[in-house]
Image (tube, rainbow over all chains, first blue to last red; front, side, top):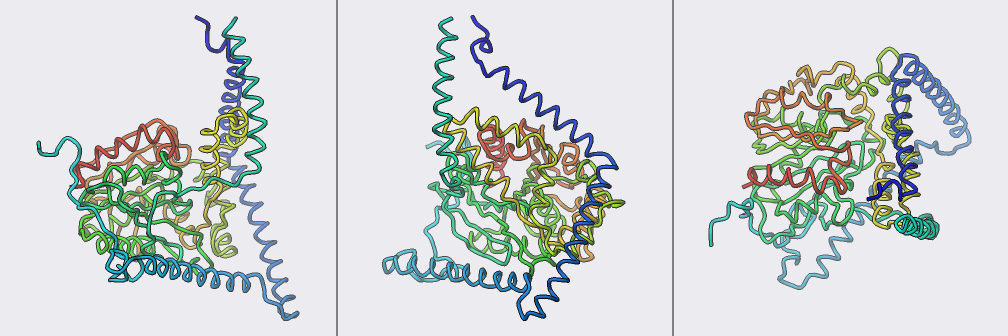
Length: 136
Length: 352
């Protein structure tokens, strides 16, 4: 009986890849667990944030002088438009479902819970775990 | 000799398939996720409460509310037919609700632990009660969703929480060693970060997770190439890939509290966490508790998660440690065989 690895040309490659991955992760984790790494990573992030903040303030002044909205103002408008679109989508879905439901059906506009979703036929809450049902 | 020749022939065929399917891979859109039919029964800002359509002739009496981790999308629990945790649950006869989170907008930057544990979760618990007509409820929390569920349970000891299930939920944050080191208070100015960004960008959260296993993404690319002939593998790989890069930003104040209260002061493990002046006393949790952890979890190592069982006041409590990692514990082919059936046995007996 031949060893499966003898007939699988990629088996060795797979083993090597797995060993490389484990080895690299171990080495990187060890390096990243040092004070030096933490200090330099956070130092770089602080410097970037400081630069971004300076640029943001500078741009805000320039945009205000040019009578143009800043990025945060455009973002705020976009968030409000996004919220309106989501609400419209929900209203549309609800109306479509109500319109498609035949009169008197469970989906007809009777009393949707919380005013958002129409009532749906629900199964009884009588299930028992397997093996505990009474014998027929 | 024949076996070797057959193997070489198969490898040649696979190489051809890799080339053909590799082209398809780059030309096709990302796979659809979240197939299990559901209704959105409540939304408020970053919070979305889903109710999955029951798919069994009868369901267990006690409904389930799943609290997703705040840093990731909930569709990891509904990845694809046959690999969906919620699909498994609804087919097994559970009535399933899920709290999913979307990216917080600038107006959400002030959200704190208090908002999640004194407002969002209790509000959703009440909505599940109203919707299902049952007062009893099971809460299942995944990762930081588990942390929020534990804090909620500790703050609401008389809230008829019938069962609490946590998946890989960190309690001792000092044992999440790399995260603790990177956010070392001597070097990490969390106030500057939050004050400058409002909400912490998803890129920072994503990088934090990626840096824990820097070589894994590269190795994953090679594995993808090797298995490019296998449609099932590629579909699964792409769904996971889509999810892992779909990291959410975190609300600024919530992130600040996570760093200061949980990582720097380790208050949850010390049982000293207070939320709006109320002590989140873990001993006040008396509901039956199941805590599932993964043997090879690189995000929440076993040592960080294991103290939960010892802290709570429940007399009916159990921890299980399964093979797998942080994500494969709850999703994918291994979860189908390992966690889900174990959970079904534990929860079924406590859901009537």
